[in-house]
Amino acid sequence: MKKLITLAAGALLSLPSFAQSATDYCAKARDPVRCEARQAALKNCGEKRGAERRACLEASIPPVDCSKAQNPQGCEAAQKAKEVCKGKTGKELKKCLRDEQPKKKHKKRQAKT
Image 1 (cartoon, one colour):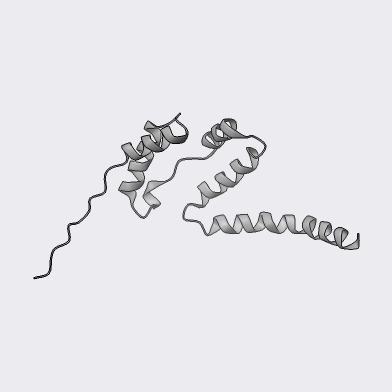
Image 2 (image 1 turned 120 degrees about the vertical axis):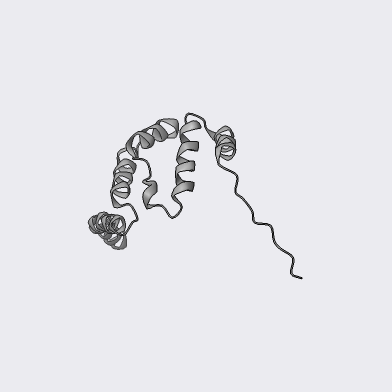
C-alpha cells in the first residue's frame, strides 16, 4: 500500500515536468510554432476517437512550412497530394497519395569499363 501511494505521488509530481519537457522539445524543433500547435491539438482532441479525432486534428494543426524542409520541392508536392486526397481514408488514401506523388527519378548506374 505504501508503494502504491509513493508511486501515485511521484506520478502527480512529474506532470508539470512532462509539460515542461514538451515545451523544451518544441523549442528544439525545426518549426517550433507548428510543434506547439500540434501539442495543443493533441491535448484538445485527446478525448475524440476515429474520424472525429482525425477531423479535429486536421482543423487544429497548421500546414507544414515547406521553406524549412530539407527538400522544399518534395514537401510542396506532398502538400498538394494531401490536398487532392483530402477526405479519403485507409487503402483509398494510401493509393491516392502514391498516385499523386511525383515519381522519383533513379539514376542509371554506369558500368565501369
